[in-house]
Figure 1 (cartoon, rainbow, N blue to C red):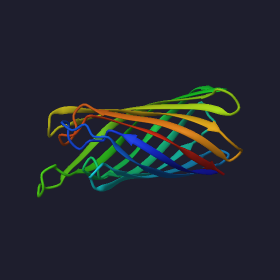
Figure 2 (cartoon, helix red, strand yellow):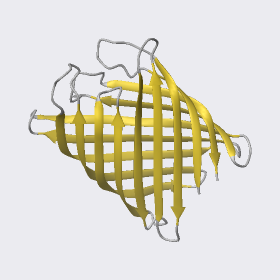
Figure 3 (cartoon, one colour):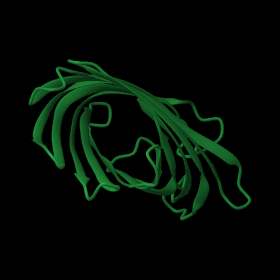
Length: 226
């Protein structure tokens, strides 16, 4: 099974901490899931295009692949990999590889899961001044998440997920903390078509380059499921 979505976006992904610029754009996404008797295989893809008044067009995107082993058990296991880029925040490349222990805390109309694990993160960043060399950063990080899904009624459901990732950067002699998450409200229009509103946010206490530590996005759009 899977889904395809097209959303309108409003966010504040400014390039520097001094700027406060609003961007508008479009987001296209496509997800594909295979659910077997024992394991689940999940592929999530997203491509975003943004533009400011008088500014250039730029894009962000990612592809995320995850396998959930022994998915029916209260304690199951996950491995994942993700490739990502973000032109607006001067990050041409990021790759994650890791795994989690996934704990089912509740599984009825309300579904609640906790994930605890580790990952290896490789990033490339461009400084804001032209001609500066690419900054490469490779870190081992702890990665944890909590996931909540609530069926409000037969037509409306709410999905929340929050991540906490932290790793020690020995070159800078500090811990780099990242908190991120999103909230998705789905309103079913037909058996295959839904309207969804998504709010996503991310905070980093020590960005690799001098950019905004906090960014958010708010999107509204349609999702076709199959």
